[in-house]
Structure formats: C-alpha cells, structure tokens
Image (cartoon, rainbow, N blue to C red; front, side, top):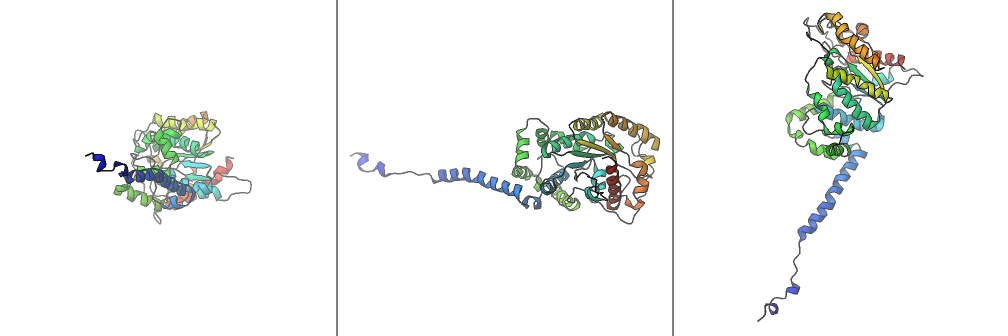
Length: 344
C-alpha cells in the first residue's frame, strides 16, 4: 500500500503566522517612531518632557536641559545670538534685559539665549559656538571671560570635543553624530541609562526649575552682603594655552561675518585684590593686558566691566566672590545692554 493513498499531502498546508507578524512589526515600528519624531518636531510635547541627552557617556545634565529649552524656544524666538562662558555668565546675564532695557527707537540689540554652562572654559566655548552656529545659523556671540577661565582647571567640560554630535556639526565624520542631529527620539534612546541614575534625574529636575526660558540660571540670595575671604584665590596664575587658543579661534568666526563681543565678567570689587598674585596690578598685568592684546590682534571687541562694577552692582547683588545673584544680574545686564548700544 502506498503512503500517498493514506495521507493526501496536497491538502496539508503549513503556515507561519509569526512571519506576517514580524513583517508587520518591521513596517509598523519605524512608522511609529517617525510619528513620535514628527510630534517632537511640530508640537509642544518635547518641551514638557524630561530632556534627552546629547551623549550617553558625557554626564553633564545642564547642557541637555539648556539645549532642550533652546531648541524648543528657538522655534518661536528665532535667536540670533548666544551668551557663552562659565557659571559667571550662566547666573549673571539676563538676555531679556539685554533685549529690552531702555531700547531706543534706532537701537537693535541681539536676541540672545544664555548658553553659558558651569565650568565652560574658552577652549570648549569655541567648540560649542562653532557647532551651534553651523546648526542654527546664529550671527552673534557674546562671550564672558574671567581670569579663572585661564587657570588650567581640568573640568569635565573639556571633553565636549569628544561628543559625536559636536564632531558632526564641526565637520568631522560621525554617523552617531548624524543620528543625534536628525532624531530627537534617538537622543531619548541614549538617555535610557541616564534616567536610571538618581543624580542625573535630580539634577535635571532642579535645573529645569532654575533655568528660565532665555537660558539664564536664576540664583537668589537676598538681604545679605557677601563677606570676602582675604586669601589669594589663584596664587600661581598663568594663562593656560589651550584656553588662549580657544579664545583666539573666535577670530575665525569673526572673519566669517559672525559678530563677536567679549565681556570681562566682574568679580566682587572687594575680592579683586585677592583674585591672583600681586593683587589688582597682577590682575591687569597677568590677565587683562595679554587678553586685550590677543583680542585686538583678532579684531574682536572687548568690553571692560571691572572698573565700573562697584557703581553698577550694589553690595547685596553678589551671590559669592564671583557670581551675581538675581538682583545683581539684573543690574549688570542693564548696564551691559546700554554698553552694547555704544558698540553698534
């Protein structure tokens, strides 16, 4: 007897429903991701969510928070200017005051976003400036500097040039940088491990409360006058060459028709004699004169503030020896706004 007479193989059909499910998933999953990306790009949803990271390994919550605010606000504000520098700028310059304080009919001031970051030195400010100019077409940079910026501090922000996104935006080949640049959802994918770290979560939550819609980090300390500790802060001050080179590189941006203004960020007048060795004379000889010479060579405007700060910022406007509180930041920003008018 033949087997074919018992089992009719032509009626036996084997199907694979999993194959259809897999195929549907392959098609549907990217569609869902692109839909979410569309919502991020075209609604306010992204602004209300936790910030996505720009790098999975670089643990610097402030840059993630500030870029999320900048990216969301830029759709409406169309910023043409960045304020850059360390925490002295971060706390100390209010872009809204720069834009609006006693604005005369014939004055046009830059519409700035405060992208200063904690411990951002000139070496890395230059990288951030180049990247964001290339990405967003900004036309003006206001860079705040102080002696501590050039004191060879090994802050983690010096690793900014290793972030793939910055490498991509400054002309280097980086596929990951391209993904970060084009897909917010990929940045959220990179954030998954960070959201499990309590420090990162707490710090991002705190920063979202302290950083306003113009990027300024508001630090208040009212009804007190800071008492200066009479100890030399930087007893062996010399200019750190990577930061000098970073400052000089802003000259390249100026040659490309980017307006560059460098601001001397002030310190508490009573602290100035204890900032670097040899007091006020050392401050002028070791810091101001070489920086003025460099900026003059690069044809970059340099605005001095220290000689006038005692008349501009009241004694209760200081958070500490080098940072302004909210009151001091308003006073200084209004002075700077009028100073910018004279530079037009």
